[in-house]
Length: 352
Image 1 (cartoon, rainbow, N blue to C red):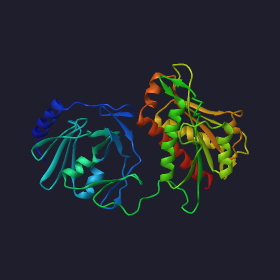
Image 2: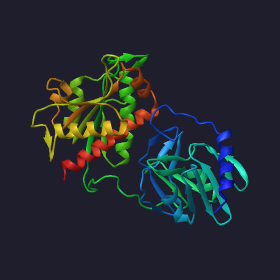
Image 3: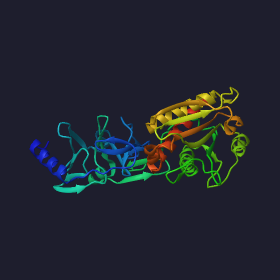
Image 4: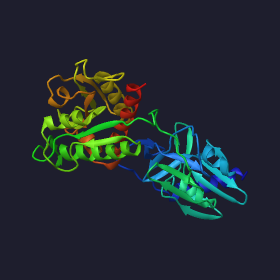
């Protein structure tokens, strides 16, 4: 173990030269905005079971320091009173300070693209910087969302309880489009936000092996009845219509709309249960205000669909703070991930 005086000297140097940066959305950890990631982490071909999900800061993945790197024989020492992490293996070592992008390694100062942070008591470090400092290669499997050190894993565990021998069908409806702009505020058109989130959701569901159909994939005008007709014609399990809301400037939050007819049920899932699951995941992932699950019996898309269907109102465009979030790629990706998680949970319940 290095002497405490040395660690304090390094910490002082780091604090003097490091300047934090901020992303547009997410949650604060050690002075930085971070987005929780569902990516798997693998070392030498084996997917790890971590105590906490990875987080992403400025496009860089951070992982639990001790759990991830002990597999490689790296020792992690944490000095909470000083916010200093020291990681070592053989003659190589890294000394870092929580919330700062400067590291001390091999008697040299190096600058990281993302700093180590504390996430609910867990020390999280940038996986690529640490791995490469210890001479390891890092790869990214985009299809399966796996960051791996060393060998790429041959198999990736399922993220859901879906049955591998069943074909699941989901229709994704990007609300409005073409001549129908929807809400327009701050130079942003609702139809564009809806389509962006819908495309992200489509990619996420396809990655889970789900058969998807989109009511529109570009800025096209689609009638209300054509949206539900597509879902009915393909025998969809679920229909998710993506929208954004408008109201007074002080109102913010997410809400989910559904049709109360008890016949709109498939398997073990009712439309109301689907709406509850969607609303829960939106609030959990986006940290948005819970505006509730609301019956809307007169909306054409919900009324004319034969399966559990929802309209997910992601946020309020009329609220300047919420609109600023909705304009960022990270927040739209989070919205899509929330809907993905809701769909997986709902399909699992439907065919339980």
